[in-house]
Image (tube, rainbow, N blue to C red):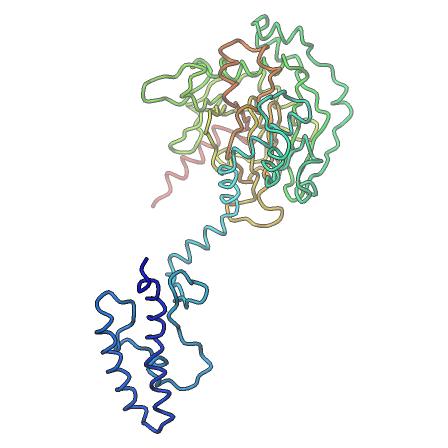
Length: 460
């Protein structure tokens, strides 16, 4: 760089101040403001001609009042020309926002449930690291790929997630919401199916009627959440790994067959059990997804063993359910469940019983709507293999969803008890079944049809 080029910025700064200095000097010698402004302008034009094209200096007709020497003393700060890159003192014009943009922004802020749901969908990798760490530290799984030391700590320090199996490591503000629910002693003392019987069931040694008379679980712990009455979380109550494997095979194979269920149909027609395209199957009353309703002409016999399991899971909590329908959801990598209410049934008196197997997932429990910000607000929690969630009472109408599934969190102990094809399927996925009651206990089909017929006869 030549000396003239290096001095160019200094010359430019001096030239910018020249008109002002001339005006001040001539004012002191007795000249008028108007004549002196004209003189400064003409001299600046001469300077501009000497500077040549491409100069950064302002033209005389763009001089500010202060630069021309005509401004009066004021408390207001006048915008100044600043060097390139010096943004700290640049005067910014206020940003304007239309009413529509403001309304959209406020609506987005109000959708507290959706915001929490989206947060955990974005954080699925950090959440996966968190769950793996918790499971490894507690001895649930052995994963050599889990990062250790400071890296592992950093991966989990920003996760605000309620873990009923690790309350000591959950955020205090979430733990303070947890209520321990007393389980009746008779539930803890019940006899259960032993591992040998469970293995016979897995191998097809017993039929549905015999299995319906056996007990596969033992409820020893249960939790609730302050501000969400009727919500109950039961940590894995199944008595053995082989019992878990029996239920996994039923959900993945038996209940996914066309003989007992309706399933999603893919464009290529692939509908077989364990298909990567399988997303859901309905049992009992088959839900009409297009019209969002149940009808009497679309139903099949409800599986007795699943019905009995749902009844006995709610029994310790003074709840009753007559299982009439169930939806089996099949989660693959990247699959989510958006926020929704289970409000299609003809009654909300009976609870929804939700049972999960496979990899862990994040379950977000909200309030009455997407915008319900009343305490405690949306509560994110971990649902692991075998865990049970019951939505009863007022929580029956709470919005809920699953923003992410954490691959690599399936307990390895479960795989040897499963047929190879089922083990391979479950290793990369998650299966959830939620059992519901469709009709009120005093429901009469004939009375319902008569009422509908009377409504149709009413003149418009």
